[in-house]
Image (cartoon, rainbow, N blue to C red; front, side, top):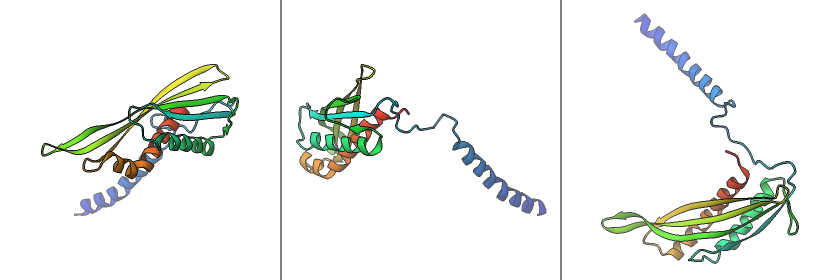
Length: 176
């Protein structure tokens, strides 16, 4: 009986100690799961963010202006770059390349869930390096098939704009 009490006392101290050591070691900079913040070369001071055009087959008239505005706000608020409408160190432009609906799930031989796919092609021109980089971002948004596309767009609009903007921002400014 004494051994069981000692074992119980021993494990009540060892297990929390192991957990604390594991957490402490996993939060150190081992490089495996480390995220980097926004990475912009020191020489880059200004950015010009052009209107994101809508070249998709189906055009949501709200998407381009809202996406353009949200991207401008995010870049200005979360980076040290100064936005300009004239000559800039970096120029960002892009277009909505896909805005389409597919079936995501079928239940009882009927469409149960639809998926709105939104793709944006982004071009980053670095004037100082005379280099162009291109990125494609795609996000999908599921909604009940009982909704019309217009109803889904209204219900998911904020989520679509926010998620696509975050994806673009991460492609442009994060190295992770």
